[in-house]
Length: 373
Ligand code: GLU
Image (cartoon, rainbow, N blue to C red; front, top):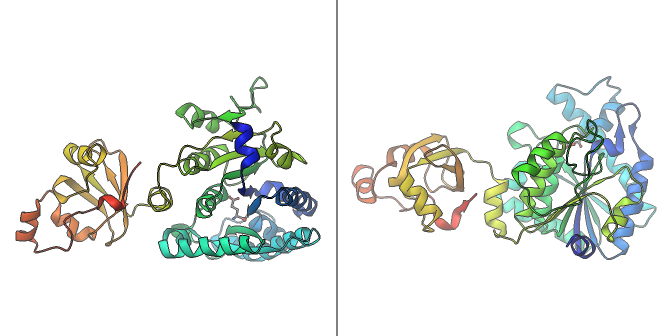
């Protein structure tokens, strides 16, 4: 299974973390970028389509601006990202240019992915670039991304990109060898897990215990990214990007790293987008009858089963559905703004008609816009 998944993956998203290509003391590690470019070029010449998600803008900018330490202030961080991103791209341009590979820069924020039209637009752009045999190099648009519109870390961004372009495989290049049974830095008896068929609670616990040197992500974020894309039929490989030559070797079936196998695709792209890309703007609390109607009878959500409404949202916004224990079990696009829904909750259709007036929709969340989590 491992061999087949790795050797047959055609479209591959490769995530390159900050610690692999930058250092706080010297800025960009150009020789590492050149080595990784060589290895990615090997994959491309073997017929694979590669997209890169690269971090490193902020650290590279810190060095260029002569800052002493990692900035805490958002505007300074954003300034560093602006300065560093162009430096980063310049290094990639040069490294790939000498191999005859053209590159393109794409900067995304959560907002670009959370709007379905913009999401699809980004998909068409990336697909067009691949059609031109150009290597897309993607990063978060850190210079404009404030908290509400940030993806936040590039493991998550890479998993979103893998979904965006319908990749076969997500490769996360880390500074550790993969997922271990225990933290290898604390327990020398820990062993590397080569194949993970399922992201169980036990796996998530082990991920929490495996530390990395990297900034934002850590192993837990990587495993969460693997779980998320696994639901969309994309497998994830975590390998040590510091080891020269490992990337092409493992992808041609050699040992190394941890492979998280994908599940059969349970959700289509739109439903996966609702479930994993969108962030709920509010919640509806449901009674047990409504929970059963949604989970076992495939029904749409009606106002009568809603016991409480929290948050502020507009028509079309994503909201989470909570069961009586407060657990979020579904997510969907809502047909009413929160203000109206607060008045409608618990009411039957005739009562809504009588008390609030005729409404355009009977369903609060239509089945087609609802995903069970
Ligand atoms: N986008 C950030 C940068 O390029 C890095 C985010 C991350 O490492 O997850 O500096």
